[in-house]
Image 1 (cartoon, rainbow, N blue to C red):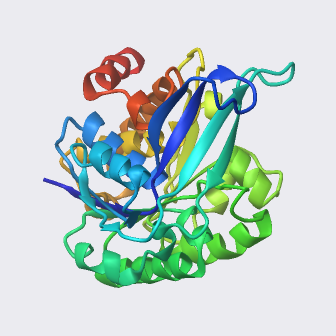
Image 2 (cartoon, helix red, strand yellow):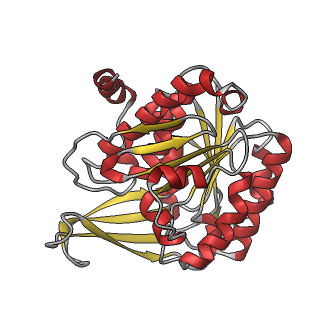
Image 3 (cartoon, rainbow, N blue to C red):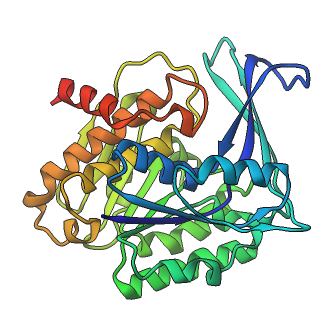
Amino acid sequence: MPNFVTFGETMVQYNAEYSGPYDPDGKHLADIAGAESNVAVNLKKVSAEKVKTTWISRLGDDESGKLVHKYLSPRTTVVAPLLSGEKTGISFLNHYVTEEIENEHLKVYQREGSAASKLSYEDVAPYLANADIVHVTGITPALSITCHDTVVEVMKKCDSLGIPVCLDVNYRDQLWSPDEAKNVLQSLIPLASIFKLGFDEAEVIWNESLSASQYAKRFHVKPDQISIVTKGSSGAVLFDGQNLITQESLPVDVVDPVGAGDAFVAGFLSGIFEHEMSPKYLLTLEASQRKNVLRQALQMGVICGALTCTRRGDTSAMPNATEVQNHLNLIQ
């Protein structure tokens, strides 16, 4: 069974079931919000549990930490001790409808100094050697100097061991500026086997006024690397050094776009594992040999991202394997 490993912070997220600013008396859906754990849970779900997933973190021994642990434990392997005297981050998600934007959302965090912000390389290292792929995001290095150093050490270790790394930008302007993000990400991209970001993120951070396809090529910086640029409702584009593959999105009624990027990553990786193929082996194939695998993986990513937008919640909104296959049959 393929082994997927990831690490990072997961919070309790209070997702408003109403439109407008935060209302303490309003109804909220208590969900679990963490980009890395989202991908772990979603990958296991969309692969019909044919992939082993492990999420590594640190949690406070508080109500939020216990809720995160309780929710995630049946859905992925959790390596996250509940630490006395430390706190678990929380976030609030509110939704707005304006004349310019049909569905706009605003996140507010209470995560500074959280248990997860002290995540170290030693917490992650024991789980690397047997991984078929390690997933990291641009959120983790923005949390603290310790987390930044942990991401760098993990990615360098994976590079030395020949373990593929999937890096998803997941830019959060509450955590760092575009220039700060650019400086860090520029050093991490050469260590990534799969690099994924949104077209909007590329424009905010790099601001080079390129097309999605041009950005996909711009971020392909070494052989045997895949770069992916997602375009929201317009789909996604992938470049592997020779193959430039585009995929349109599904036409859906958007309810809540939060978590769509994580769902995309889970769907894309599932599309690779579905062929009984590890990302490491895929990257060694000739471009013509891997093109069909990458095309289907991209289709699965787009399907997962689109369907997640039709429901509220992060992991709770992710489609299952049957739903994805039904839509895959329609577009192939």
